[in-house]
Image (tube, rainbow, N blue to C red; front, side, top):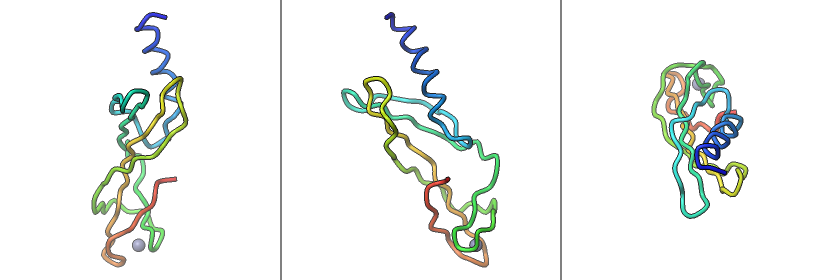
Length: 100
Ligand SMILES: [Zn+2]
């Protein structure tokens, strides 16, 4: 298989991995057989406060969490996922979990 064909097949497969609220930023090799995929939020809807459950755009900060995805071809796949934490005046800073 030529390299361009291989890359196209991988791009198509990667698209199926993503959740609705994320899109691909880039991917890079992680060791010999590792693949790190960096995602960003498309932010179609605001996150929810973990304390009261209300959605809000009062974002406190965004951190990245690395999680293991299923293997893709010969690659061990990891995702860097942005996790938003909110800070509502009534609730204070949020300790959010992974989206979904
Ligand atoms: Zn709240």
